Amino acid sequence: RRGDSVQVAGEAFKFASCGQLQCGTMMLSSMLCAVKEQLLLLLNILRNVGRILTDPNMGSRISLKSFALDFAGMLLHEGLTDPGKTCEQVAEESLGKGNFGALSGRVAIITGASSGLGLEHARVLMKYGCHVVFAVRSPEKAEGLLRGLRAEEELSGPATILRVDLDDLSSIQPFVQEFLALRLPLHYLVNNAGVMMPTEFRASKQGFETQFATNHLAHFLLTELLMPKLRETRRLGGDAADVRVITLSSVGSTLPRNFDMDRFLPPARKEYNATAEYGTSKALNLFHSRELQRRCAEDGILCCAVHPGV
Image 1 (tube, rainbow, N blue to C red):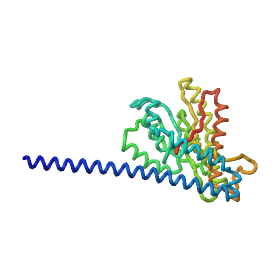
Image 2 (image 1 turned 45 degrees about the horizontal axis):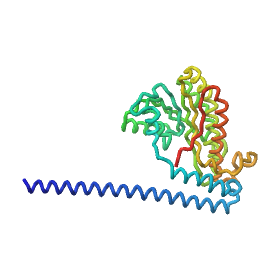
Image 3 (image 1 turned 120 degrees about the vertical axis):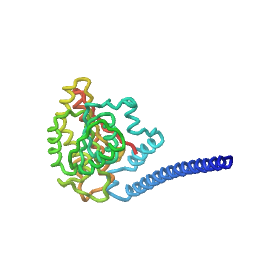
Image 4 (image 1 turned 180 degrees about the horizontal axis):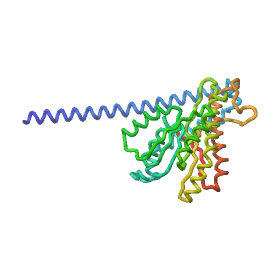
């Protein structure tokens, strides 16, 4: 029996040692991944500095000052000061941990809700009872993802999946009509979907550069067409109705050195620069949100553009 006890103790020690080793390996792997990400970011920054100095199209749109101080400087500041809160942690602080009925009766439309930030926003909102409308290019993909989310945890909020292709402006109005036919209120419009820096000029269905079309034009049109519903929701709900338009911009909005709209909008194929066009589209998100807030302030609707983090 004593021999058995010694053997069990030995096995337990080996198990604990193995667990500690595995934990240490995971921590080391995580640190190496973080270092790799930072090195890739630094390499990309240096590459862009070289392009600003050598590429006339880029140099005429982005200055070293705007790139180094405004863009890279803000990224560095964020890296040093960001507490790294998750979407769910923010929800817990705002709505109360475990208060999963807090958003019951609220309705949100999220563009690009089938991947990345959009999918995480959708998951957390549904977890707290919000009815989320997935505005996506591929309903089939969204349906599969939604089944996976519901299989992993309890999501009390309903979900509706509607198709829209932000690269095709002609699909915006049919989407809005389909949503209005549901006879739902609309509390939150989250303009989340976006295109980031295609290496080559790519035209939308209407012939516009795809970042300009998707990131700005499509969300501008979508917001305008849904504004009557947003105002109606606010009016019928009174002061208790929390109605918002949230547009995901980016720290990339600091990149452009000037806004010669006669020359640079809409972006031309021959002057295309992926970084400059991305920065311009994200700056346009800011301009749109600022003017929208000015126009909606009296209605009690909050309109804002946010940097999602890196």
